[in-house]
Structure formats: structure tokens, C-alpha cells
Length: 219
Length: 230
Picture (cartoon, rainbow over the protein chains, first blue to last red):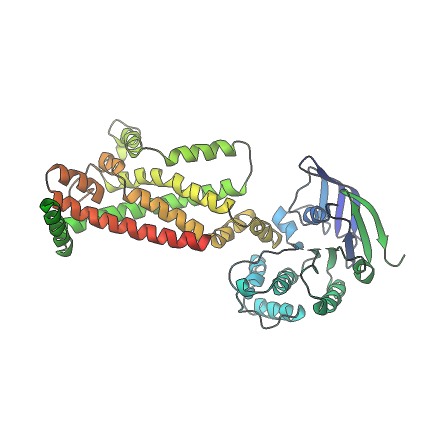
């Protein structure tokens, strides 16, 4: 099967102290990848590189097999949800509608997709809520919904459970685990040592900007 | 003291009587300043955004240049554009000298660096996650810039108001490029300078009061916006 994300000979220098160096990494479609490693290992940088937000000084990142098309077109296939996401001014609906409008999805289809996605992440009926009045956990869910509503081929999540309380964690993990059924490849970073075992089809371990190993959960 | 009091009372009387000449002067001031600020916004907002978003060689130099242009003396702008628009000048055939359009051009030159600088500050002070969020949602650089303006709209509005404050109160450009022609290019500031020199202190004072009122309103609005930005 053709990989959905391919990184080849990647070098990302950030200042004089840190560099991310990945010789080769291929992500298979419809899988969940858990990205682990200590603080400063380069997890966020790797996610940003896959999201085409940080462009490497060397090497290539190919998303969904197409190197062609503008950067914006390639970015439309992969969406990153940051650990502390920024929500646009306005309502929850405005946030979810933004990316859909860019893809030409309007009217009834837009409304239906937004409603379905908000229900999916457990905040159904939040459409008209002002983003500035949301709690940290709710903001995280809105950011996740905003990414999911776009139906990306690859969803990148930077420590998605950091702001989620323990009661909602189970539902969130169930949702995460179900995303490959919708044709979405998920890469999430985590500090929780048990999470990769529960969720990840593969575990990617980073240290000092180097990929130490990639293990399959089944093995 | 009586002179000042009497002049003030006469000035208020002139304003309340809606004197035609005063109204015409106020209209010319507001018309030219509003047109200039629209052009300055069209030039300054993209410039500020471009400098705020992108990092490239020579960026610091352009920012330094913009800072210098903010302090540009109005008479120098007037002088340079006078040379441009005068009959012998490269744009002399357009016949713009001593028309409101020459004043608008000069005031646009004055206000653009101010708008650009304020927008640059608004972008630099904005949440650094905004742009990445917009890009990861699939926006092009242009679409992200448009949305960024919406996100920092209070800062952008403050930029426009600051530029307006600069042009409504300037004398040099209006005098040199407009020529202070009664009923055509006479603005509040040029009228104040002229009428006071003619001994019409009350007339000058009446325009001064209106100008102060406009400046006060502009600054109140600016303060309100800055509070919202912060």
C-alpha cells in the first residue's frame, strides 16, 4: 500500500542547539501512530514538519503521494491540532466553517458536516457558542472538530489529551481509535506511557531529534 | 483676558451659526483626509502585514525606513510633491497642483508609513499561533493574511485612526499642494493659519475648536480600540 506520508532525508535546524534529523519514515494509511519521547525530543517539530508548517532545510516531505500542487493544496490533506490550539474569533460554527469554505463547501452540506462532527467529538449543539467563553477542554474539542470536519487524510495531534479530564479521556481515545475507519491516518504525540499501547498501531520513539525506532503494537 | 473670552464666544457663535465658509472648510478637511486615509490603508495594511508575516533579507532596513518616514516633516512631503505636480514636474501635465487630489496624494504619503507601522506592530504582537492555524486549515498565504486582518482588526483600526489623526491635523502638505484656495482647497488647518495672520482670531479659533473636537473624538476612539487590543 502506498504510504500516506513519506519523509526522506529530513533535516530541520532550529537554532544552534536542536535539529531534527529523519533518514526515512513512511506512514501507512488508516493507521494510528503514537509519537513518544522526552521533552525536547522533537515531537512537535516532527508533527509541524509533517503538517508542512515547518519546512525542512534538507529532504522532502510528501503527503498522500502527491508532491505536485501548491503548498496550500498539499496542506489541505493534512491537519495539525496543536497542544494549545488557537480558536478564531467568533463562534464554534465560524471555526469549523473556515476550512470548509476554503474547500468550497457551503450551505446545507457545510451545516450538516459541522453538526455531525460536533456530535462526534461530544459537543453537539455548541455551534453558536462564542469561542472566548469555552473552557480549555472544550477548546481542545472544538480544535479537534475543526480538523475532523475537513476529513483530512492525515490528522496530526500534539498531545491531544493534555487538557482533557480523566472522565472524557476514554471517549476521546475511543474516537481516536475509530478515525482510521473513516479513512484518516492519525499521528499523536503523548507523554502517557500507557496510551501508545492502548491506541497506537505503531509507536514512533524520538530522542534528541532522531527517530530511535518504529515498532508495531502487534509485535 | 477679555480678548480671549470674547474671541471664544464669537468662535462658538460662528460654529453654532453654521457659517458657510466654516462648513466648507470643515468639509474639505474631512473629505481630503478621509480619501487619503482610504488610500493609505490600501497601501499601508498590506505593507504592514507583509513585513509582519515574512522574514527576509532587508526586512529590518525597510522597517527602519518606515520608522523614519513616520517622522517625515509635512513640508518636505509638500515640497517633493510640489516638484512632482508643478508644471515643469514629471506629473505636471495631470494638472493636479492646487487641487484636493494633490493634497490627498501628499496626505497619503504621510499616512501610509503610520498605518504600515501600526499594522506591523499589531501583527508582531498578535498570537503567533494564528497564522499556523490558518495555514494548517488549508488557507493560502493570501487567504491567511485576509483572515489575520480580521483577527487583529482592532489593531488595524487603530492604525487607520492614527493615520487619520496625522493627516487631519497637518498644515504643510495642505498649504503647499492645495494652495489654501477658498472654497476649494482650504482646510481647517490652513484656514486657521491664514485667518489668524489676518487678525481674524475668532474665525481661526472656531476652526481650532472643531479640529480639536475631531482630534478628541479620534483619540477617544483610538484609546477605546487600544484597550480592546490589550
